[in-house]
Length: 512
Image 1 (cartoon, rainbow, N blue to C red):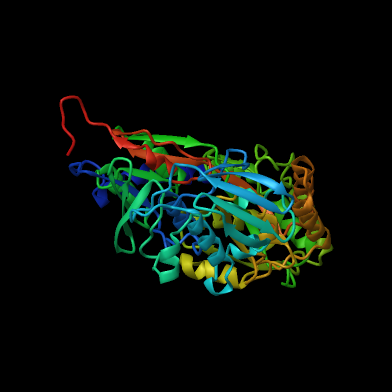
Image 2 (cartoon, rainbow, N blue to C red):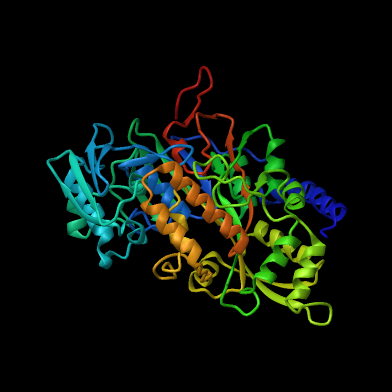
């Protein structure tokens, strides 16, 4: 078992060391940079693709939410709500959407009309586009406009949750036809407009309501990011900070720290075609060997909650499930049943990103598995290499987090046997006729209450089969300098709060 006393000593030492580290970096005691007209958000990594049809990384999708308006939004429970449009279901396979008045002016000045919606979804459905959304939206048979404000969708098969799939930014049809480079020069009708992308780690936006300028600045090292915040070179940080850094910032007068429960799902993923991790007894042994409560208490310092499924209980398909219990004796028994023991230890390779906190987490998991006789070799890589290996199935065991998952089409995308890459994200090669059947039945079920029960049955089966081991939902954290006000921290970590954030000017002062 992880030595709690040793862990506490390490954490205490880190807390003492952090102020010194930041002082060495120039983050403490030095003069703050003078404020200017730009509000800056510091990120661990910058966006990669500002075309909402193609983006797959979390930062790009969060930025695209600022730049592009969507037909449909999702509420806190993950249920569809009107965005650009309201809708009616005319038949089980025919939906009619009617555009409203808000969000209908593209940054270039043209008006968003029904033909833009049609062009966006037709391009997603075109195999030549290579959109990752095509797999989910493939149930669309035809999409057509009926005047400037009305769009009709005809489906190949009924799906009562269809409107929830339409949370994709709308692009101008003229730009699509002309091959406009949306990836680097986005053109949407969202609350922000693109200004410039002078370098990969610096994106400039302007808020359309008042012209407020923003910069999204990528600073990979979290300690340097904190230093820049304390010096006033950055105004805001969100997530990607170790609990020690968050604790350190709580003691600083220059900043305010906010935290809320999160919904992003952290898990261990397995290659089910591997001779070792493909065996259920091995996966069960690993699940029993992990002491989630200790990790959350001491490593996360309470800033997470245990998870048993992708969706938390408050989601509309959330299930009342408990994560696998911490039971070292059961772990050893499962290993013995699989033919492993002191004379024949189980040896596995765990792949991780090179983020310092993720490496510390990997080391804790390594120690917990070692306590039951599993030898875990940790291999860390830069993010691109690590995620490329995961996508290609080059792993036995890895740790990742699903970010921004709001609708249950994730089960088809990640667990259906027809969704093996490149046709989906079933990277562990999980195959279950029962889960496939439940996914198909859920998509056809017209009653949302019955559909929710089917999705809960899927989650129960996944917990029994363990293609993933559920770990926890990490909290969302936002840190800002004290003159920053109005930011609303979202449970899924999106950047929508930038639409209202502002720098409060001291009495008697003038804005820069």
